[in-house]
Image (cartoon, rainbow over all chains, first blue to last red):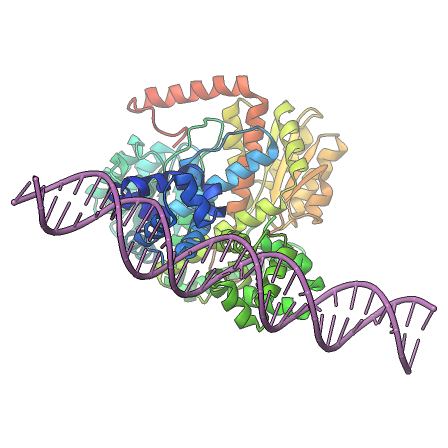
Length: 287
Length: 287
DNA sequence: GGCCTTCGTGCAAATTATTTTCTTTATCCG
DNA sequence: CGGATAAAGAAAATAATTTGCACGAAGGCC
């Protein structure tokens, strides 16, 4: 649990003075993290003891404990609250994107539904055939990534970003197969159709999408991904990064479940690559 | 600049006592981050003033400044030094992957070649046609992501993961076009061939790859991505995440360069999506 | 080889920061 | 209009950190 989450939770119950302290944390975090208790108290116009009490209320042992916690989480988890002024300089753009990406990962981690993920891994590992669907650029990337990840483990999987194909595949799928689809927005109506079709044929369906969305409602299992989106239209969404990480988590769990098979398959794939290229086997599996 | 980088740099010049302090930081960082100067000094068997001096040497104002820096970077940047014990529990796997991904971003950020990135953005923005190449699963994802990113900005771009097609396209490209290729390993011989071909025809080539690798050497411009790879073969590489972030950075910079055109194109794309779906325009561009 | 310088170190004092205790003030409820 | 309760500050106590100084060891110079 991080302080900002706690802060959010406690916010209503704070007193006036404590609220002033909280405001400083949120608005001028750089200051807060470097200030001594006296400086912080001064700026919030309260006495130092009040600050100590505030820290305790937030679950910290002491002021210095609080500062450590603050520095620790805030670096990553904070900035989305205060979108920094943007410049078009490469250094700033890079900083901004890296931070947002780390942030997305942070938020993803915080909101992961581990039970759903475990169930997903379980189903995928046992499926006789997997159909991975996604459209529109981002989700189609996720679908083919899923294929890229899972075929290496010796699983039978195909992916498609083509709505018509998806429908046909959903119709062809059997109850021991699994249909897994991704939709960032949760409003991909064609995917909903494919899920519905699959459901009627008792083919299990899994959605990676926003919870509560049409796509989520149409699936048997939903792995929710609920992240706030930045609103600079020039900036590609860092949500993609969170999805990729989620895929990694799922794929890892699947890998552990099919371990013997996976080791053998991976060895064969690697073998192929080494023979095919220049014999240096330090390279990655699949460039 | 973060403390661990500084620590690495200074390591040789540290005295005996200071080295003992450094060891504690590296080995028992959890302790170090929570300890007072007295506790830390006690554990390192030195006097508190020595710790203060140590902090100053590392470029910090004071011990508390040092602790903040430590907490700040360490949360993200530290763990790769101490590979944590692995379990197959979902929570641990998730934690591990998220941390590694954040780490990869951290390391990417630290090692970014901004000049090369800027040059790349410049070239891409001005290209009459862009060819994005990559193969082998990971890099092919990068190539199509590049297309996914850049076509939205109104640029002319195609991507291919097919070696033969790449060669033909490289042969067909003109000097005002740009060929951009990705290779995680840097050892994709076919990509090298395509680059060489393009170079002979004076088509500018850009590589996203390991610096010093064959692919890097074959390209006009290299945007280096040099990240250590984890060695658990079941764990998908977090390097992909770094590549995706790099793509975002490049795409953002390109976007700023072609701004008027990009705004118009994006508006049209969004329009399409909204009309085509259910009229809710809060959704992302391209699911 | 002896002397001098420099550097690293710890001790103790001084300073500063933080917490505790106690008291005052404000607010809410009967 | 009391009395109870919570909030907040003042001052004192405690703890942490830094500074100034002195000692000792290592290395260079005459």
